[in-house]
Image (cartoon, rainbow, N blue to C red; front, side, top):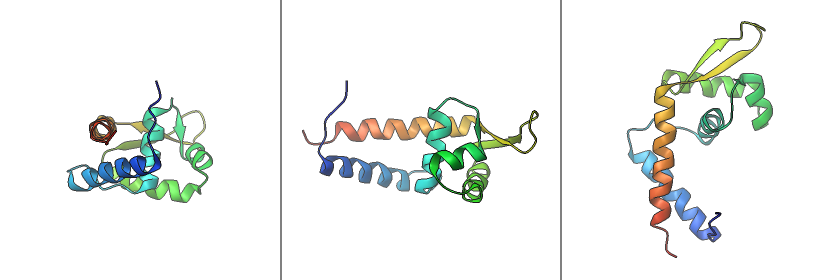
Length: 116
């Protein structure tokens, strides 16, 4: 069942959730990194650098830079595709799954605080 909120409520929700993320011990992620993270965890695999670049409409180097940071933070892992060594497969990690779950929990909690 879809919920209906006004644009001002949506912006307030976005603000409050991102503020909670900034204040938390969750790794500080850019909008691009959050989008990549959510794509990897919410859409069925496999995910490749090439596929993410096409989906997000950015270059492969932009995806690679984001994944470098996310890999150091333990949010994703990468491996070469054994069938086609040119492809790099993006893999989920436990820390990445927990981070996505925490973000989801923050959104739900903050949505409950929205004025009706």
